[in-house]
Image 1 (tube, rainbow, N blue to C red):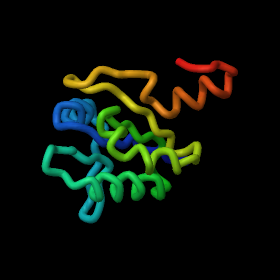
Image 2 (cartoon, one colour):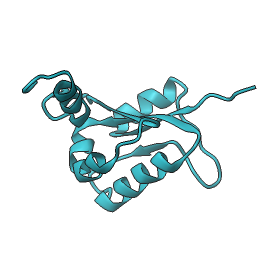
Image 3 (tube, rainbow, N blue to C red):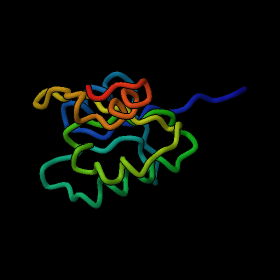
Image 4 (cartoon, rainbow, N blue to C red):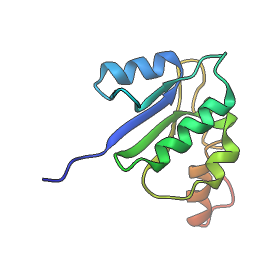
Length: 116
C-alpha cells in the first residue's frame, strides 16, 4: 500500500494554527512538518527549515506565507524541483500579491505572458 505525502506549512502563528487545527501537523521526536515564524525567528532558521523540507521524501506540498517567502526569495528561486511543490499563500495581515509569487511569474512566462 502506498502512503500519501504530507502537506507542510511555514507561516505566521495564525496560519500555522489554522492548518494544525485542520489536521495538517505531524511531529516526531526529531522533526515536524510545520514552522511558526515569529518576528524573533532568525532568517537562517527559516531557510534551513525550508531546505530540510525539500529533502524529505514524505513531504508533497510546502505552503508558505507570501510575506515569509519574500524573506527567503533567494532560496526559493534556486529551488526547481516539482515535488515537494511550493505554494505561496496569503496571511491575515498580508494579502496575496501574484506579482510577488515567483511560481506565478514562471507560469505566466511559460504561457507567453509579459507580466501578471
